[in-house]
Length: 301
Image (cartoon, rainbow, N blue to C red; front, side, top):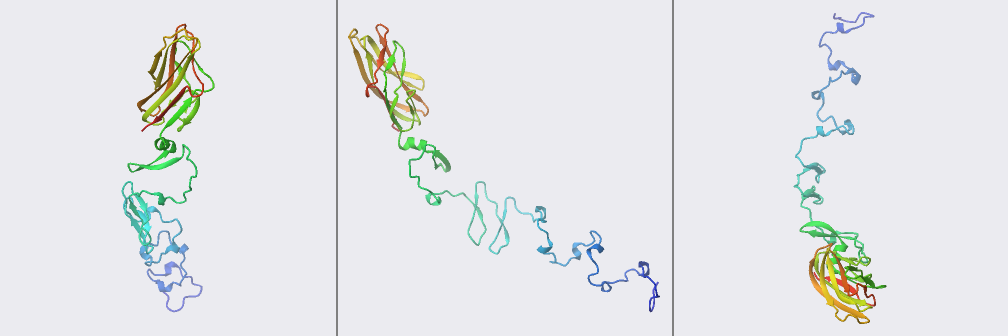
């Protein structure tokens, strides 16, 4: 129903009184339509003013990876000199990300080595390194750590010497006896064990091994005596003397032996052993006086 002139008193206008498409936006008071008046999903992007959504209208943590533009596999996002985001090209296997300085984004490059000037804050050692102190070296381009104990064996070579001290060693008839030189004189690599008489080669190399000794038999019955070297469990005779003047009141025999043993592998155990024979199966002894009986050696190369 359309009224001409004034609306009758006490007449309420309902939606049935309004013709379709009769109310224009000009007839709606500014600010009277609020969010509660809008139906769910009733406003789409075409109804929004271009550029009207800025950062203040986006809540924190609301943009997910799915909402970001697609990129190239392996790219990393950085910023250029203008502060704009820029993709860093994917590097190759083994390359590292390095700074190219201000004004340009980082880039993937081959890993560079370092020299002494690259190490900052270094403190002078001021003392002999411990065997477990480590150095860095290049093995055909691959950086590796090495303990000082290994370098020491190369730079200072390997050397040891020991003597029999404090008591003689009883030698039983026709019996191989380990000779323990129980007092160290020098041992550069802690490779000699004065409790067992064993020298263990710390590195593979060409070794020169030597021994001096003094046998005694108070009864003069020593008929034969031998010195042997045991290398890695195999025994080799390096000296033998037969005594034919039996029956003397006292027999004392001394000797020395030295030989280039050739290449000995790292970890090989070396010790001296002796064997005597007497006419009456009695005992003899290996002397401990002064430096009568010694064991020594070093690595030549």
